[in-house]
Image 1 (cartoon, rainbow, N blue to C red):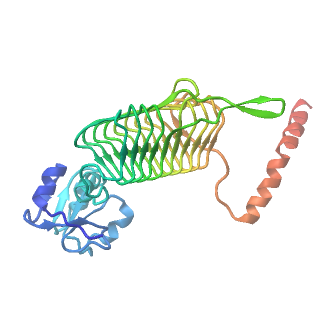
Image 2 (cartoon, rainbow, N blue to C red; image 1 turned 30 degrees about the vertical axis):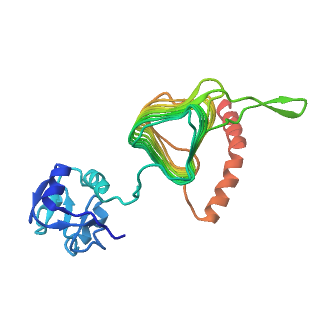
Image 3 (cartoon, rainbow, N blue to C red; image 1 turned 180 degrees about the vertical axis):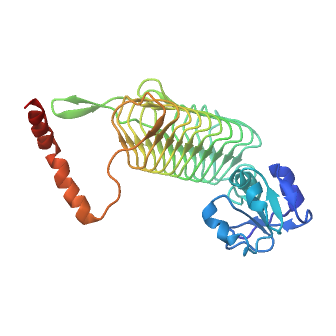
Length: 339
């Protein structure tokens, strides 16, 4: 992607807190991989698997750890965590937020909404009565914000995000395209073979510095609120049910589903397609492997997994037969032990 922002290597060293090796006045216009970077692009080496590209890269400069900088005679920004340096500098070259200012003529804003004068509102956005939107907020095209919701300072709502009524969103939150925040939770009572809907009268509270991926759904509480703590990272296509609580700085990968009233602690990591039963308590600093099914509460920090690993189909079929035999084998073993 063509970049239009231009910095010198000295500028980038100052922005990232890195030590500079080489030409301070070197012009950098963008970021790229070691394999593909050109003479005016900055790259980085964080994964040792890519070290083989370092000496042959055409990058104008590379972000390197001190050990990797030994013997490298090109331009470099040297810091202990090159991946973090890349993350910080990536925002300088990010074209994704797009240009825009003011309120698009096609936007519909209730006269009872309180919208800060410097808020950007895109085409066909809808802001209902009682909404409060703080300064620095960017609302892209097609966003709907339901009545009595609150949007904190410098938050960015991407195209076609839906914020339902009574949702509270903190500062510097990023919500990507198509996410739905505050839809009804899955609450039903059984009556004579039929389902009777339970009104979902709680809300959703999202803390500061949260990022929510495309098409992720966060249900409102049945009673009380669904709560997403400060600094949480949610990938695309995640389902978070009513009255779930997610602690600060927890990161959850795509396709995870979390059933109602489960509480997940702080600083957890949950890999893709994991599933959680309802009403569980998950401790802080828990790490869940991909496709794990969590059916019981976890009280101790650590790494947890479930299911079987990848194997050839013929081996998997044999093992399925053995799994089915385990109960019978256990009973026979107990009989032998008694004898």
